[in-house]
Amino acid sequence: MRTDSTAALIRTNRIGDVEIQLYNYLRQYFDDRVFIVLANFSGSTIVPDSMAANVIKIDHALLSEIEIPYFDGIAWVCGDIFYYAALHRIGKRFDFFWLVENDVVINFDNPSDFFSGFVTASHDFLAPTLGSRGPDWYWTNAAARWLEVSEVKGCLFPITRMSAQAVQHLALKRSQQFIANRDMLLQSVEGRIPNDEAFCATVLHRDGFLCADMKNFAPEKCFSIETFHSDYPVMPEEARLESRRGRVLHPVRSGEAARWKLNAMQAKAPKLYQARKEFLVKEFGKVLWEEWSGEAMSFKAPREPNEMQSGEVKAVQEHAGVTIHVGFHKTGTTYIQGLLQRNSEKLADFYIVNQRSDNSKRLRAACQKVLAAPSPTPEALHDEVTAALAEIASEAGGKKIIITDEEMFGFIPGRHGYWKLYDKAAEIMRLMQSFFVGKDVKFFAYTRPRMKWLLSVYREAVKNHHLDLDFEQFIVKLDFDENLKDLCETISHGQFLDHFEYSPMEADFDTSFGLGHSFLKFCGIDDDLMQSLEKPNRANESVSSSVSDIFLALNRTGIPGAQLMAAKNMILEGVRLSNRR
Image (cartoon, rainbow, N blue to C red; front, top):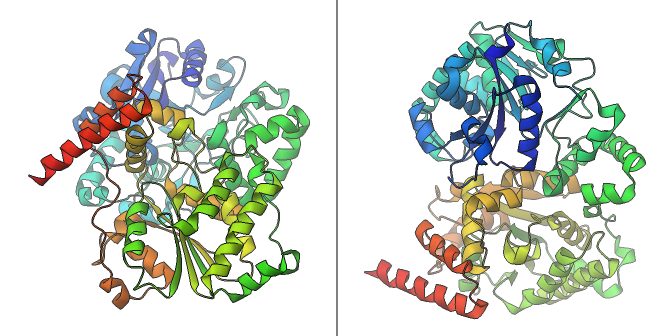
């Protein structure tokens, strides 16, 4: 196989220092045959002039050209579209493509030390951990159903190599499957369609293409579970260690992206987590470990009743159970809070702590002190949360308690420069569960498809919190490439909460009651009472794309806050009047 017939592709949704560094590294081996394949559905990513000729943008127009329907989350679930985009734009020039995700570090001084081992491999598909998958694998059911196979194959997708023939074959099969199931793509697709790992491995194996595990051609120990995994993050500084040389590292993460994966790792593989911690503390020191890991999100064990003040014990013993609505922001929380407030008399059997009512103020203030505090959280702030919970339990008088206030669990991203994505939500939830120890404490959250949620959060921050970033800059700044379902799973598994349920918002709209159905059922409200509830007049007012653009322009003018909000309110009133006509 000629090396000049092979191109390297970088899979990304941004172009920053990390992507430029990877681009320059790959050029040492592939020369001008390195291309950044950029998911750019918002259309606002800035491309450096020096790289423009080697950037392939995946947007709605390109998907239309390759007959792949767009759906929310396609660039995350279906990484294979990055191959199809490259084949469509530059395919005639190359026989093979490497696809490398932007959080991969190929930790060889000379990239030839890694890539040269694959020159003689004529395989159509090479991927790490390529092989059969059992029924417990997350993507098995979707792959078996969609692809009508009895044996599902899988792999890891951070770094793969594929022949142009294989890419062309997969593009046709993926397009046919999507077009045949177009209506389903309008809904949440999480877990319902085969992702890139399942689709590529299963289809190519089924249809007779030559496939193999990448480790068969890679240097020894190149793909070690401690430094190459889908869920276990790698500290960027690790690339400097001698013991990490000659390996492919993934996912190399920092900030919140690293911390959520570390929480999941602690839950799924606690021994491996502890070993990694001890290794990294030894190599880099405790301060850097805590800064990277956010380990202060772990907290003390639940207090036993005999450790509590006597008044707290009495309150805990008297209440009948607690249901806590975590949120998240922009998942219908304002509407649900309005629903509960409007029907307070019909729901008199419950003691409701609502963001709109005075009885939430003390607890919200205590929780927000925890949110704003540096890690580890001072014990005194935990005590303030406990005292506020004791007051609520006492006032409830034995009734079932419903708490709904998303502001207790995190600030909306982009508000006043706050970019930590619910980083202490699990800490506060664990505190609440610990206080009501021995009782039925349940947590609930709604989820939404990732890009719909991000866009809604972004417009809210532009509307009410004077955010002056465009949407693409907002996504890069937030650095959240998971989805709300993953966030919920990490919180649940990482912090050992007894009962945490989450449900897609969209599922409620398929019921006769509409939004709030899943939460009210979770609270124990029966169908007859639910159907008698009066609906609130209006949920939190969202703005259109055009109005959001106007607000963004106003935010960038430097107008003082009061004048800025006055101008926005005038625009909103004009929109309301126009909608009434």
